[in-house]
Length: 59
Image 1 (spheres, rainbow, N blue to C red):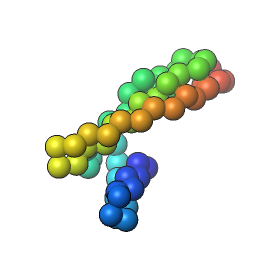
Image 2 (cartoon, helix red, strand yellow; image 1 turned 60 degrees about the horizontal axis):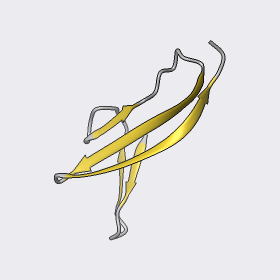
Image 3 (tube, helix red, strand yellow; image 1 turned 90 degrees about the vertical axis):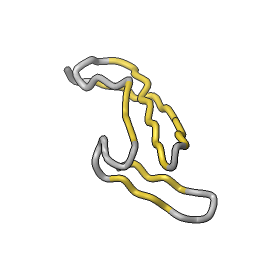
Image 4 (cartoon, rainbow, N blue to C red; image 1 turned 120 degrees about the vertical axis):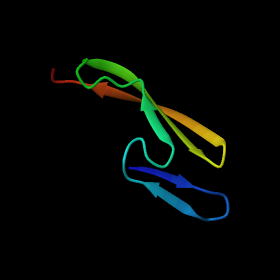
């Protein structure tokens, strides 16, 4: 789930990837090691992007 918190106090939640204008990239669940996940969310022609590091283990 992606949650967008707006400055006017409104919270928008998007449940399914590809709907509501968000994308996830930079993540390969089949590759062990550190990865950077990038999430972009677009609404009304404005896009906000954030990233965070994850560690994939167990493959």
